[in-house]
Amino acid sequence: MTSAYARCRELHRAHGRTYYLATKLLPAWKRPHVHALYGFTRYADDIVDTGADLTPAERAARLDAWSAQFLAGLGGASIDDPLLPAVLDTVRKFDIDLADFDAFLRSMSMDLTVTRYRTYDDLLSYMEGSAAVIGTMMLPILGSADPAAAREPARELGLAFQLTNFIRDVGEDLDRGRIYLPLADLERFGLTPADLEAAAASGRATPSIKELVAFEVQRARLHYAAAAPGITMLERSSQSCIRAAYCVYGAILTEIEQQDYDVFTRRAVVPKRKRLLTAARCFATRSGRPVSVPGRPADPGRTPIAAALAALL
Image (cartoon, rainbow, N blue to C red; front, side, top):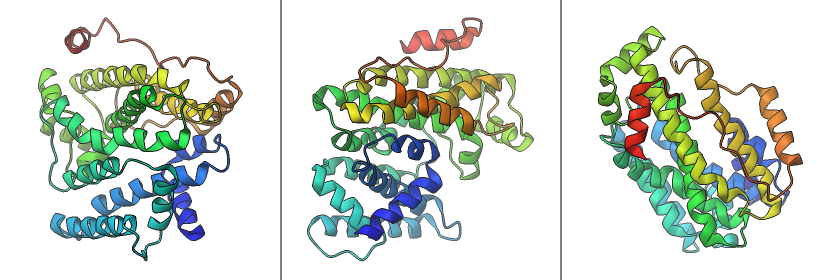
């Protein structure tokens, strides 16, 4: 068991810098369980995304086999796996809803066959399992006096974080043959997938792509705004952690804005010093203080964006 928790922590530290830093603000007894959930989601994602020499069917078989091990462990079977014992222990201790894990694994399976999403509603159906349920899985560990009220903001925070990833990582996703920005949004700005591929190849975004990215940044901010009230609903000992994750991840959008929405020239990264200062400031913030939505409102000078956002609202 100890080694399984250690393996999950290693995965978290290696691949989830923002989340890992924020987790340090939690009470020590909560941290291993957050690492366990991160390890579970990361390992499943790695099955889907690694092994270029494997066919989608072979990766699907690996994911199915690993999922079957997880389900067997829930049923009490002895599991020979480097990290699943920690996940199973966390699920039992906090009575985490198993439907969330089922939804997550379904979305991971979708990544093996679905490479495009027509509308944002289509993308949301994927993100429900790949992101929103991460928030609700975490909620029992973080704790809340009113879990029912905190559930929807937790879902929204998962969506905000994942959409931030999709915006930042357009080029990396193209390398995997995927586009997570809805095709209808591309068309709204006169773009095609081929335009994104050409921009990735040249290492520079066109004006129309910048308009698209700016639109998606403002859409992500809508999710951050919906998530903000949930932070003060958490147990006092958990608020600084999620506040830090919220602020640091939201700052990725600010970095994208500051590079004029060009996500191809360089990967938007929040500097380490800024991440550390933000975490320190969040640790010093008193519990119960409302969280401000990071960034600035949509630029009214960008007429297509303003009109598109108005349609959303």
